Length: 316
Length: 316
Image 1 (cartoon, rainbow over the protein chains, first blue to last red):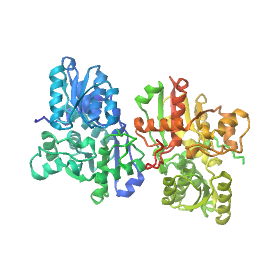
Image 2: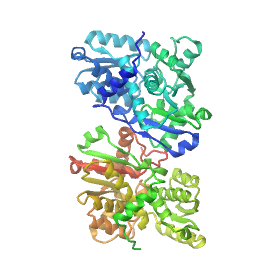
Image 3: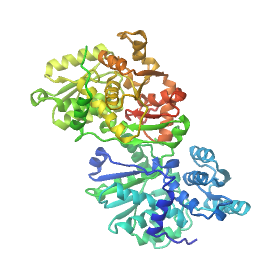
Image 4: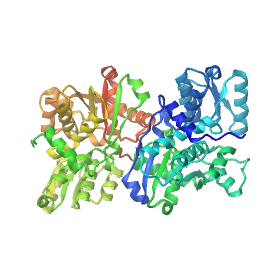
């Protein structure tokens, strides 16, 4: 499935389109963490985004990009959590239906949030093939428009809007680090960042148990069969083909981190930054902690992607 | 012990004095929580203050109010945690010694932070009398200047600076809610708020197991003997005499909340606002949740006082 990558102009259009609905999330700094790394870090707090994750940006842009005729039967997606919730909330802003296909085993707190947002849940087996098959079935039955979590031009454009904000909220960033799951966030962010400041270095943080992007870049070909094994429930997706092209084009370096490193980073963010961030989000800080010497002396933007955590079941 | 209350001019001076060292903390809003209460809430995030609590403001103002001669032998205080940490950090900004008397049973994470900040710890029994006796002993032995956690004009002035910021960061607040422990925060905040906007209603949130301020106001006389029984470790202090005068003068209404209500509010803040706030801080939101009809339709500032939590020992 090849999907056109958005232009920086489309990302700017997305920013205008979602502005009435999305939160302009704050950027936090922390002197203790800066001292620990020897860098100046700018934490872009997408855990404070509507729905508790950056995903609202892409979903909202997709929903409001539809014509009235297209929007009539609603939207459908498959998602382990945050994108489903985001699409449900975005659909509600337009008063249209949302159908969300969710794999068995998804985080309970996330499923409850999707239902509260008014979506219809459709359950399926926890494999990528089962998710796509079920979504296609729902799409045929309802006439809803598919909004893929990451292999979608409008979604990528929406995610990229956070970098437009981050660049305005910081000064002279040298590098930006985002997690890599399906790669939609990284693609949107890299296009936005390089459309404005071509010299910014882009880093992706990927769980070592779902390092398909790192391996695909290393082998020169996209890995297509892959069983993720990571606690990072938001990063188990296989990277999209076009998204991988975007990573290559924008010279994204991927840093892999173990779940242990990510959990330690998550705990440190909670203790020091005083933010509730979910485990997938903590990969970015785990990557910076792991390769401290690489980031020392630089101005680094870290995208904290979400804060949807089951606070009754913390990973430490 | 009667202590002069600060003027709003002294609070403005304090703001200028601490500006080079303190964080201008953000004010967060949240659509879901607003909908739940039917109010417009402005959360002043002092958990994001240096040291993870508003206490840095008062301690920093006290430390930098000293003449060089006064500052020579350092500062001393007694504190169950956040004020001790704040004084240690404030002393470090001036390069002077800090002695902190801590009761047995204080939160481990807070004691570790005080030591990391470079203070000398002095342990004592967990009673108010033992704390004051030990602090007097250290003061005599070292020549350090006493900086009381709340019965101190400079400390109250420093705490009040957060309201100067909050009023600039919000629009037309009708009410402000802060927790009440020793009452230094509330006194400083009430003086600052009414110095600028006399019509703002001030509410104090107090644990029902440490409701000495509520009882003192109800009985018309300050309760002087009292054994606190609450999980809110930051709010176990007996209200200062002058602080109680300030509460009367500024027509502060005290809302008492049970520990169960506070823990539920804390969990909701973590889940929805995505902030790590400590249990004492959650009393303000517990009070608003409990008396929702009182706050509905109003613009309410809530002071989230701190975020120093042992994330390995959450209260739910």
